[in-house]
Length: 175
Length: 72
Image (cartoon, rainbow over all chains, first blue to last red; front, top):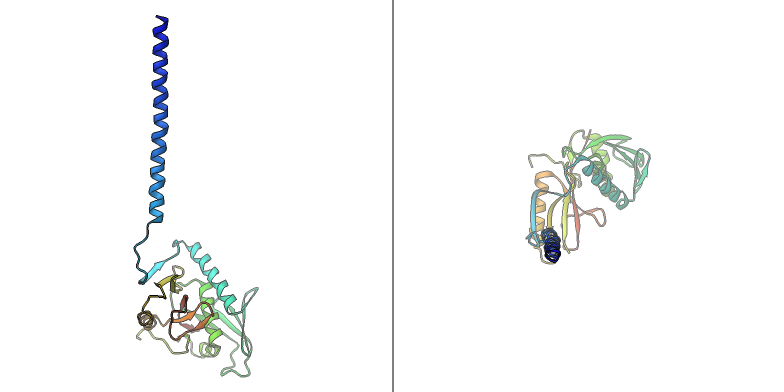
């Protein structure tokens, strides 16, 4: 009688142990399957050809305002380095030939170079007609354009509201 | 190695074109860029030098289309 009970208890223990081992193995395998799927999804090529055109627009930001602003700020710092501009308290100093410009949020001040200029304006506001562009990228746009064509300052000062391309040509939406 | 043409927008910087400069038809790239310029007034700048470029070549890896500015 005692022997039967011991045998039954041993058998039950074995079955219970086998169930535990099977359970661990099954859950583990499911988890690995899941991980495998994620890795496969991440590693899957996007079937994009080597050469393609993304019409307006493939957006690399998450769409959150903070990300867009942070991204714009990073791009601005890149442009500041590229144009050899200097960061000051309330904007950026840019030297181009005999000109020194102080560029801030939607305004440019000419600190040096008025003598040779076409206009004697010391300051002008500016805006990028591309609606909603972050101010850091507007400043980056102004830095790049002035570095390449400092005469644009006089055009911005004199031709209020006229959109000028980087090469100085007037741009109208009708083009 | 891919090359990119990007622009600033209200959604952050945006890729307009991505291509392999070794195999891409650069005339086609420039045709697309010319269309974009006609539509927006943006002109290409080489982001390696910060200089405005008239024509994109296979040498450029990153080009930024810079939008017009108005005073006022």
